[in-house]
Image (cartoon, rainbow, N blue to C red; front, top):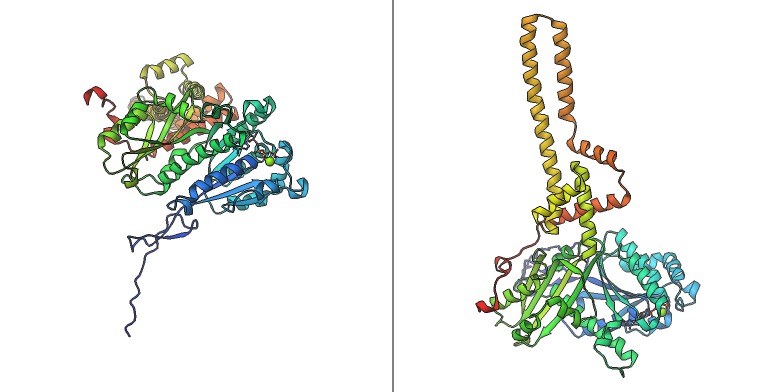
Length: 510
Ligand SMILES: Nc1nc2c(ncn2[C@@H]2O[C@H](COP(=O)(O)OP(=O)(O)OP(=O)(O)O)[C@@H](O)[C@H]2O)c(=O)[nH]1
Ligand SMILES: [Mg+2]
């Protein structure tokens, strides 16, 4: 019998150590590719219920169910036991709480989370991207959350947070606990989204039982997350993948909003967007983004093959209208099952207007310190340019470069000047013949010119900043953030196709 020839396959590693090996159907070359997994981690009882609902939803979607994992961390054994086997359970602080909840004690939650840090570390081991869910206001959820997030950040992994805020009827104290936890947590996540439980009243009537109301909130979240996972994991005609997600969320403490909406047809999508897209979407969702400025937008359109370029263009225009200068990554997926329906999944990452304004103010201060101009001049200069905030960040950097260039030019001019003077001195030397005096002059000129040439212009700038005003750690942090942001922008990973930039496809032109 003939021996079967061995077919050689090439191993392609996307992320070396992570994920399970997945066999691709249509390529013998790329037979083994490791898919990066997104791991969901719920913190506390409410988050466990949410992940139970989300995992139920996802388990019905064979295309993505094997690509996500669900974990729940809690001190309450009973609450963990009530979850389905789709969610892996991690019991924390058993020795201290005896397997019960913390009874609203955030300090106790923090203490047991730190004591059981090894268990938490195991949950974040061997994955790089986490979606952390927590229902703020509760003891365990509010106290243990920062411990988990801090650990993720220290390990230089990425996380986005989905944090629910309590109902008004739960009392002021719970809201205060929730706000405090949110404030602590946001410095450790790349981006977070607050979900206002209270907003469910916009969707339910008076007779809806509480459990049903919670279930509705959780289901809404599950629908959005399903769209999000499909966008990341399913191949598209224009594909959005994990790397796009990574780029979109990079940064610290940003706000993000996630929506996945199915429209009956293109006409209803267009009708939806007749007035402001955000105002509409705000009404539609449990999230809230008054005063939110999206700086990065990742969106995907799923439709059947009849989707027209014009449709894509008009959807994009609707989205971009909110901030035409936002960076955009977009994808298109075909799905025969959609028939005339259109699904729009969108992630908006940005900051509140006032936060941006504060950052802007700080930038002007830094520029004025760098250039020695007074605040008003620096501000006027920036404003007269009429540049966008994103452009302004770039300008902060280019301003530095310009300063350096000017200094270099000055140094060069001085060198030339020195040479000329040296020549003149030489002539004089020949004429007068006073060798000693001339030698001293030349040496001193050479000394100063060398010193000038080798003195780094940046060093001068920094010195001047230090002399003018001692920078606080906050200043340093902000400067660092600015620099990171600029670098990110310069990576130029973003592609806005020409037809998306043409914002003027108006209805009347149709
Ligand atoms: N959206 C949503 N919110 C929930 C749900 N269950 C609880 N919550 C909210 O979450 C808050 C915190 O509740 P839990 O998560 O049960 O509290 P915990 O963190 O386990 O706190 P302790 O039991 O005190 O340690 C509540 O005040 C509710 O506002 C849920 O199923 N869905
Ligand atoms: Mg609990």
